[in-house]
Length: 514
Ligand SMILES: Cc1cc2nc3c(=O)[nH]c(=O)nc-3n(C[C@H](O)[C@H](O)[C@H](O)COP(=O)(O)O)c2cc1C
Image (cartoon, rainbow, N blue to C red; front, side, top):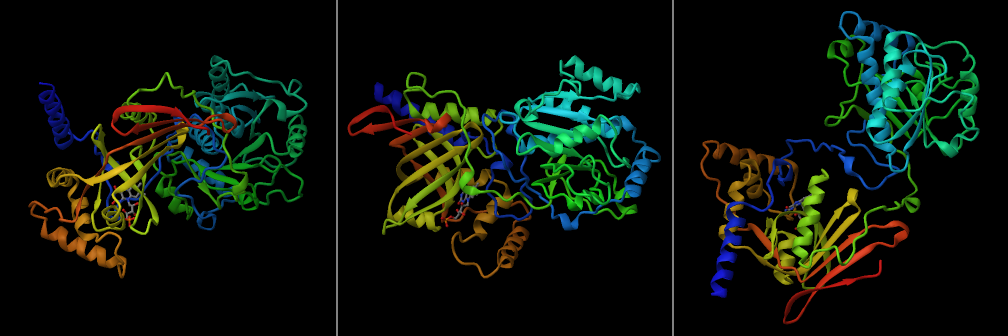
């Protein structure tokens, strides 16, 4: 009776795997040989538990290929946008402020740089700062505003009202703390923009002098023009403020050529092609849905000093599931819900008969109590390692959650039927890619792959079934060891290991020293 129940359950599990893969196979999870899509990273760290002080932004543009504008050109472009092209000033201000806020959020995470002071000047640049502060508030920062020379125009009073309704504090110049580094992590320099000329007047002259003397913290983010700099000649007299980040708007102004800080971003994803053509503007493409793009070289970092202080909920023995597959399911679901990219990407380590290890990433395509499944070419390096030594280790690292999972155990091929089913569920391009790629063998050149790919695409353009290559299929690792790692402050990380003892189906949970 019991056996029948177990058999039924196993049959149910197998058919669930065959007909409804436990993990959704979305295009983003497809492993494809095709060069047709550009991998665009969407930095979706909204659920981030931790901070990174440096993060390189994809689609980074070479500053040499970006145009720089004179003061006159910048003014003309603004007039064109707000004249014949139908933009309003508040629209452009909203887009500029949003670009500044997203640029700040790319580099300075709110968990480490939450206290922002936006110093806003009397004109449009100040308005950009007010908008940026509002968006930063919604991104989880704690902005304060110093806005000493308010204007009575309704656009500006509206921005002030919006901030007041969010209880964002306004600080007078007199009430600014003597030592800005004690109260703020980031200063937004939104004092003067590209139309400014002459010498800064009180109280901004004194504020700029204070910004010039700042050391490492707070970091300074200048909106379009570092205040006090000449719009075209930059910090021509020397001794001006040295922002850590410059967010150029629409296109960088000539002064940006002398910006030497680590983070130069461009914002203003609204320039119509007609304007770009008229002014011969070379503008970078923006990644994904982002409102900003890094231009210029990425910052040089001291690798030995790179470290993160993890802050996470504790992982305690009495909170975890007694079954590690259920615990994995829980963490996996949480990682998916947090919007992490490629949650199912895992490092697979194998060894050959000479006990030489080798690691690479593969995509998990299903898991349950029978094991963890991925697909590959059986004649690849990993396939050959696994035929020589059918044991492997899997490693997941969910960076934004400070979590790592290790899984080890023996590996076997899944049935041909399972592989067939999965193979035919993939996009036709990926099926052809699997035929074309004699994985891990030496290829004389990229064209060889493309030529064969094109040939096969033509061959199967009638929609006929693309046969699965014999050497392509799935492996299943049956775990005998799991470790769940949760990063904690001061390197006192949580490590809970699940292991099996011979002849005993119950998992033993032990805490390991970090
Ligand atoms: C995120 C990611 C996912 C990958 N997924 C797979 C996969 O599911 N199957 C696969 O064969 N290769 C996958 N690859 C490519 C492998 O890492 C590796 O280059 C390839 O399988 C050849 O490895 P081998 O020569 O060690 O066998 C993936 C690579 C990355 C970066």
